[in-house]
Image 1 (tube, rainbow, N blue to C red):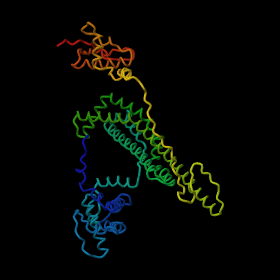
Image 2 (image 1 turned 180 degrees about the vertical axis):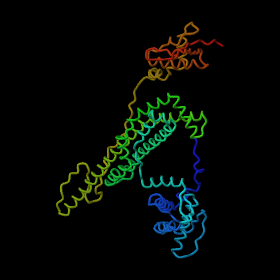
Image 3 (image 1 turned 90 degrees about the vertical axis):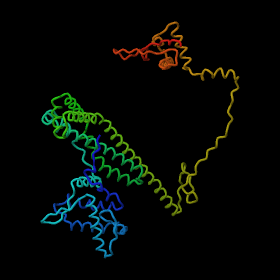
Image 4 (image 1 turned 30 degrees about the horizontal axis):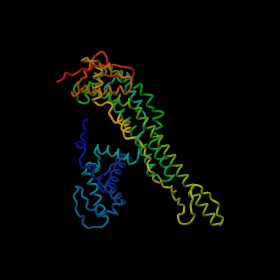
Length: 473
C-alpha cells in the first residue's frame, strides 16, 4: 500500500489550533462558521459578521473568564506579543480578530474580496470536507446503513456491467468498502456501549438512558436494517456468483482494464492488475462477511445481557437497601421494632459495625507429617529406573534398527510399520536419527510424483523410504 501524502494536500499547521489549550474555543468558531456557511439559508459571511460572531463566542467562553491572560498573548503567526492596555470591548475585539486570523493562517479558510459585498469568508474545499466529518462526530450522527448490498448487486448485474464494466467495478469496490467500514463501526459502537455500561453507569436511570436512548440511536436503527430490509445474506450468494462470471469473461475484463487505464493513467499491464486486485478485494470482503456479522450479533447479545443484569442488580439493590432501612427507621420511631430475620446477614443495628457482616473465620489447618513408605532402596531403584530411562534414546533406536536390518544392507521403512502409538513415536525418532550423520544408518526418502509419497498402515502414515546401513569408517 502507498501511504497517501496528506500534507501535500492540506497545510501542515491545519490542526494546530485544535490541538492546544484553547481547542474548544477554536472548535466553537469553526463549527459556527460552518453552520452559517453550509447549513442555513444562503447569505455571505462578510468579515464584519465573522468578527462579531467571534466576539460573541469569545465573550461566552470559559476561556475568556478563566484564562484571559493566555488569550491576550495569542498571535496569529504563533508568536506572542503583549496586548496594549485598553477597555474591555477593545480587548475583546482585538482578541477575536487574532483568533480568526490564526484560523486563517492555519489554512481553514480565507477571505475573498467581492466588489459588490467586500471581504467574504470562504472555506477551502478540503477544510469543508474535514469540518463536515468533525461536525458529524461531534453530533454523534450515524450514517444510515441502507442499500449497500443492493447497490453492489445492481452494479454487477450482467446488463449493467456489460454497458460500463470499469465504472461498475469501481463503484462496486467503493460501495463494498463503505459497507464494511459501516459494519465495523457498528461493531465498535456496540462494544463502546457495553464498556460504558460496565465502567461508567452506576444507576438504573443511567442504564435506561444508555440502552434506550444512546444505544437505540447509535446501534439499533442500523442493526435492525442489517437484519431486515438490508439483510446481506440475500445478496451475498448472487454477488459471489457474478464475480465468478466476470472473472471468466475476458472481454469484460479487457473493457474494464481499458477504462481503468484511461481513468487512472495506467498502462495495459497496470490496469489489468488493478482490475484483478479489485475483483479479489470484492471476493475477500464478501467471503469473510459472515464472520463480521456473527461478531456483531454476539456483541449485541452481550450488550442486552449486560444491560439486563446490571439493571436488575441496581433495582434490586435500591429496593432492598432503601426500603428495608426506611421500614426500620419508621418502626423505631413508633417504638414498634419489627422482628427482622437476618439468617444470612447478621448485623448489629444502630451500633458500632452497623450493617457490617464480619467475615467467617475457618479453623486453620494444622500441619501433618507426611507418611513415609518403608521400602528397600534396591527395590525402589529397580522400580523407578525404567521410568527414568528415555524410551527413544539414540542408542535404543539404533539397536532397534540394527535388529531390523539383521544381515542386510538396507530395509524399507515399512518393515517397521507401527502397531501402536508408541511404535509410531519410535518410527518418528528412527527417521529423525536417520537424517543426521551421527547414526550408523541413514534414511533415504523415495519420491513418486504419482501419489503423496507416503505409506499407510492402519491409521498411521509415514514417508516412503529405506533404512540403509552406513559404511564403517
